Image (cartoon, rainbow, N blue to C red):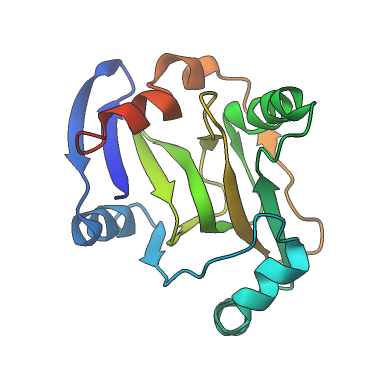
Length: 194
């Protein structure tokens, strides 16, 4: 189940909102200009590459690309298949996205597998969107945010949508705020008794 948690920026220890209800999450995020939706998922082979993932979701990709004029679509996948350097690869990937940043484009992700958490820093509030398989999230252009895939067992596959051909380009704020809020792993442990 997806989770949305909010805090005041001055008090990361006290939650001001928590819900695992998709309708409540959708409503709350819409008020922040964030699109949240859920799509049906399909089983993929453990070794599914970008082409296989995009083929499995071809209809959805074509529909949303047409509706929102996305010009570039790719797949980001982090999965431990026994490669000896997985821990280092996962650590480097996590560190890249963990610091607060903005983009000159919407950040649109559909989670095909696994989990990850988007943290939005808007005014004096931080909202954490714990995403899992089937979740589509669109963080609006210019929104200050960061992303955490966790350290316990970071594994996810997400289809990424872009309006321009540059792909993922972050403008980092230099604010250390991301280090003061509960991590993806801590949120995962707090979900619905899981």
